[in-house]
Amino acid sequence: MTPNKPKKLKREFYTRNLLFVARELLGKIIVKRSGGKILSGKIVEVEAYHGDYDQASHAFKGKTKRNEVMFNEGGCLYVYFTYGAHFCANVVIGKKGKGIAILIRAIEPMEGIDVMTKNRFGRESIQDKEKYGLTNGPGKLCQALGINRVHNGTDLTRNEIFILDQQKLKGKEIGVSKRIGITRSVNLQWRFYIKNNPFVSRK
DNA sequence: CCACGGATTGGCT
DNA sequence: GCCAATCCGTGGA
Image (cartoon, rainbow, N blue to C red):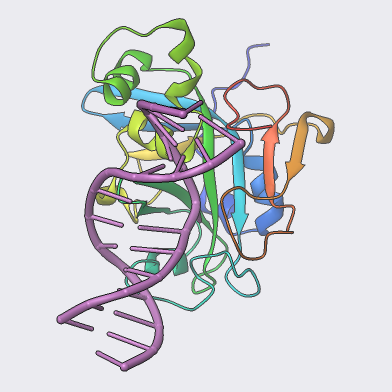
């Protein structure tokens, strides 16, 4: 029996409970079409952000020009610019108007590693010690995939950027911790990662 | 109008 | 491990 070809995740995947979806995104494959080429990688680390009681969320203070995409129906991409240098990509979750999203913090490169290398380091070749630095952080993976402000609001049920379904991971394969780099609501254990994967940004 | 600071990164001590 | 770089959205005067 041949395995089924992986299918693109549909709207219904994204409109469910935040923390269920955050765990289920681990191991799934994010794909971006770049010209004629396919860039893809396995999602290995995410963080959940809620709109209502989570003070670390961009949506906590309500809708603004910057965060308005977070209030869309689940299944689109929220891309923001930070520290004057980096883009970060989030998957919008839940029903329209909620302001809920999941930050993709790290991926393991699969297809198009040559293009990702060029995007990250400006050259074709890569040294062994640079291998994990390709996509082991939220700003790094956006640079590798060529995700920037023009992709803010991209519908993930279409064909430019999407996520392929994969088998759900077992609970014991998933690590849980506090979120990284925030100063409010610091105690929520809303970071999820694949244990022992070398592309995870931190222990 | 202006000051503040951030869901980061990379380079230097 | 520490810290500067660098943009710009946001909020207060």
